[in-house]
Length: 451
Length: 103
Image (cartoon, rainbow over all chains, first blue to last red):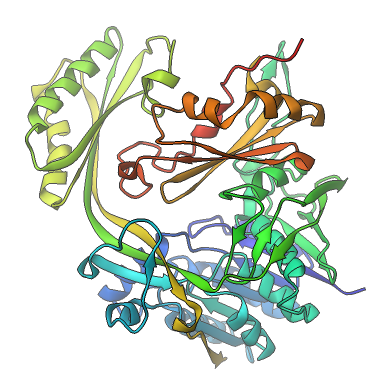
């Protein structure tokens, strides 16, 4: 019986590269999928493209391709990734260069485009319905990208692409497309599409399925509790799924890799960033995770079944990235006797200095005491030996944000005794607004290159 | 007892929403989670850092509850001045909640 093996090579743009190489070497894979495009990443990539028309794809594309391209070509592993970001064509051309440089002949590289809708929104050719309130003024927009479904990826696979580089597509579609291509699934078999989406959803954050974002080491009565211990996190192995034609999926990781894969890690990841588990909206299906069952079938091996679905939505989601001012942030430490009182005095000085400044909002944190959840949840904390004061302010202008940094640094010579280790930075805020557009407002395209 | 004794959690974010899953280690403890960790209690637990009501969904066959929390718009991931702008640390704060086993 035919089975398809899909590995997860990355869970975000900056992810580790060695686990992907390990999977390609030892995973007997058919597909290696890199999910590298968080909500805001594409807006940042679009900014890079505006500065340089040949840029705008994933900053680690070159390093990743150099690490896995030859290996995947040798073993017939096809690569699917959204590393095209704001410029899939340039990403494909760059990959073509790398293939040629490595002497890999006949590698077919597809660029999937059509997600960029900023011009059609600006010109009014496509109308977007904002999901919350109204969209920001168009003058502030940096990017507008629709979440496309699996169709253009399935088309590129049918056309024989070995490497597919997309811009914005729904993350699970990167995994669903190979399954539809391999098994010839009916794309209106909503239960199959729902189960395929479960597979994609579990794999899309890579190491988060195999013990990343999970460990909580615990000691009880002088010995290790072990319920949330994860072995070998420094060499965490990324997951792979072996999927059958009926959608049944066995998840595992390669022998010798670090990490942990069990019912607990899978349940956490199944619900990760999900609202109603019975209605997970994607461009390809409204997936229903409420009947999913997770069964441990061996060490670091689980079987996942029971994903279902309903007809895909009539609209597609668009993320609009826009400029939303600047944040300035500075920090300084106080330690030893009376550290807390000196940090509080420094905070009060800053509050006075920055009052009436053109900051929209200012915030002060005492790191080590209550900086993450405020005083209510941090109750009963003993006074620590050292405190790091953090000041952060948001402003429309860069100059106003930069003043937060300067005022913190000035505490060296103008503030309480013994302030040390001041640091600071400013950054532009790239915010995201979501909207819905009609499906026919989007025209996905596939462009093929051959080495 | 603390939720940490019987359950584990994972936090995710979408815009100004935070999602927290709460999963019983043992199937028999799910009933306690369902009874004790109501949406209202979670909203009260996080009243300093969230806004408005909390939604709760259940997946009994996985021993799991899923909570959707709303942060004030000023604290959406991109605009937030919070040190943990994503709210990733909130799940661990949920596990510090006290629950009373029956009997």
